Image (cartoon, helix red, strand yellow):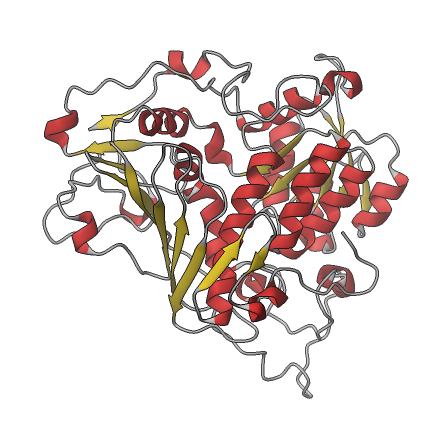
Length: 463
């Protein structure tokens, strides 16, 4: 059965007060601006996703500074905001731009935490793209810093604002599926090269010249130094290298695992194990299957969450009986049709399996959901809304800065989600089951995993 949220439902309760939101020890009202006053915002990482983030806030607030290590990537943002001062180094931007109220961080993964933490320490509100951090340790630091400095925060998992996702959370928490012991989440990532060794020409006579528009040393940032190689790292293939990224898992699980993580009130797993095509010392694997085991939470039973990427999906035994909706190519068809025998499930999705039924979300963002078996849920009516509906993903953050309630994906939640997800990469890299002590952030059986909890930064960068 398909459940969609009406426009009326979407617009209701847009204040976002209430259930499940973190509230800082002191009200943000004391340091916020009035609702009608424009904010001064800086964009750190002005190309790519940073450009669309900027476009989401530029009509209502002032873009006063732009930062990007690649002038070519930043060209469109600079053209749209000619009055904004341009920087190559975010540290200089944060030092010089005294009027800043907030920043958006949309750099490669390895720069998220150092840029965001420096901004928070300076009292700036922060919107940071997913995954929130590169390392498990950084995620814990982000959560603690947001609470300490009492700033308004938001992670860029835009599905959090979808009414369908919030309704799915309410449905699961209403008990409609019965006790849930099993979750499956899968992705079409990676869509970039992975399972790589260092480029063969990196230290040879064919070493590429650094483009004049690129500040390569600043692009490397916290990562250990390496030569520039054309078409190996910038502007997109950086996603295939451990020094800069968190693999397919980090790229998409903050989206696709968002809904079940919230609905089932998951926290730290007790164990994580993985199978994969085999990572290299330099690059995540071409595919992986990662299993997280979560303990009971109050009256909620233990849960096993399985992640799949690189073309791997749940078995037919898991998906048996589903009459799935056809989202071929990752896009919703104008008239979705049930998948016929022999067709495969969508390239991305999430399946929550309860004792009495299943909830299926057929995309990365949790914006739609379906309940199975259809004969059981044909007349199902969702519970009355208990989670306020969103006025818009970016609007939530802006309203929080101006004294409103915290955004739904503020760092108190987003950092815990990110920290938990990134544990999967520890299991991938060590190749064995990891027993995990979440509160103390350590493995009780696999000391070799600890070197991946917190990496060494290059000089000049810290958290």
